[in-house]
Image (cartoon, rainbow over all chains, first blue to last red; front, side, top):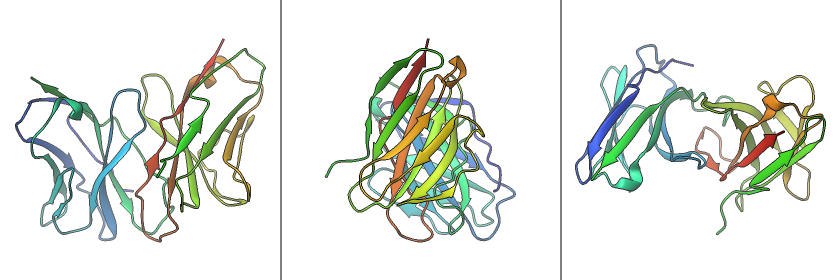
Length: 112
Length: 115
């Protein structure tokens, strides 16, 4: 699996957009980008995933660069409840389902 | 529509005892995964099961740990002769039987404390 690099931490003001970067320069053509988050002491929560095209759902948007070497998770209007560790994971879609490699992630703190 | 149910939420055991953690997947999900999160560390994959089958146990410690997902009932992660280093949060996740998906629904976790 391609390795991902994320900033250790970032702050965001409540109500503003939070842009979380992720580098995955060794990603291969059949690997998807997944985002999960873990609010303190809770189980991880799936947010979004994509292969090549940008994706949007009710939680967030995922922007993947054309060369697919990096991506950005966008939380459009951050709330205090979005304070969590956010994990960017690259995984082959059809291989070893569910065997995700969680790195250290980005600790996002949303402040009033 | 209940999510992934794990119990107990908290379990305290003395060294040498056995710990049994149970996981009921979401309705309609036939794939179950167990992850472990040691204090101040990231989540680590342990095992992937389908009904009555262990598909991938590459993350399971070689000794004392076992997992099952019987035809009827919840999946069980069993830790025999627990040691202090087993103290951790154990998360179960499930997914539907759809190929190509790594979209997991996680439970709230079971926190094991070994005295």
